[in-house]
Image 1 (cartoon, rainbow, N blue to C red):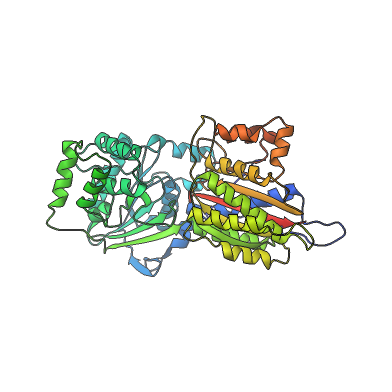
Image 2: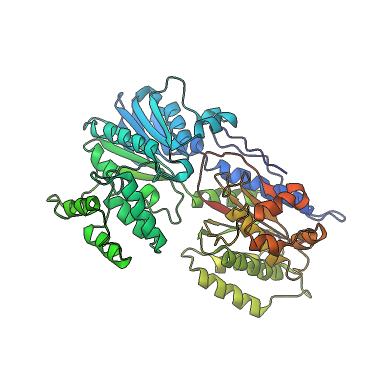
Length: 525
């Protein structure tokens, strides 16, 4: 069953249908009704982090005085506003900014993924498109999320706009996930190809994302605070939609409006660690030597206000509020769920069994001490800094056997072993289904949902999937072997065939991205 997302300039919410209690034989709802609620909650969670609503919450303009308020700061607008942006969600963010502030906007340049305007127009989301004859110039590039000549042209146009600003101007910077590939501007004489080759070599040798970003910033005109430096002495307000666990502003799009805390010695240490220093192109050596002898020392960004306007944590807060409106006791477990998808699935399987046992009436199977210990061990192995497992179990125990909704978000990783059609949300959901189907869970209905807020789970058209414990046995009856599809990383093919694709989540292009959300529903019968 497909889910149609209605995207409005303001927060769009599907009608909520509360749980029903009591009456002869009146159980809370059927499994399909629970699935309907789960899909609806997913849709409304995305609605909280769409570009329009986020921009409206972040910006407040007094039309009479021209005062723009961002958080606790005020800026005087008098046809002195300029706009730049880069990222997968920036087209919708720019459209919202134009709607709010268009009368003061002098000029803008944004760098967005190739083909996004056509995709948005095709999906009927006109509110995410700029107005005809807009003052914002749009560059499309970075096909397959890789820097290219088109995104380089965009980056140079953004740099030129920033460098021409004066102390009387205000630069509004819009940043979202994918921004790094859409803002490539190597410091000459380094070429785009040389920079890409170096980062690929580092990645192939096991460099972390933090190490890769350190090198990218050192070789970039705009990353690591470079855009903020180019815009000085203008005031800069950076509105950021985070797709990174923990929302570190210096990591999102490689921090173009955040001063880098790293120096040349950090770069050389990384290059030495991976045995690449001796093989550096002459151009890279030249840039690093030049930075090492910079008489001005490290740069600061005191003229910049960086604001996170959307994040996974914000999406989960909305999901919790709406789950509670449906009659669930809801707890946010973590907004930093990461690690191998197999380990994450094992955690959710153990959590469902332990929580389900707590919800079982007296005389039932009860809680297994061994499984509870395994759950805590698995949680410790995941090393999630914000995990609220103890609090979640306390809510379950005190829930008087009422319905529970446990919420989490983040971005688990998949180790590819096969060449099937796959997405990390669909793989996580299917692995959780396999865990849930290992043994009976007692008189408790359980549903797990995993979905990507951008509406695209890997190279598939689906956003994710939902599962229940009966899935594995039902799939076997249809001649589908769950283990085989998992072994080949072919979970989209599985869900497409299973029950006619009814377990897949389809939202279409959402225009936002705050990573993934996971919902675990437990409902005593």
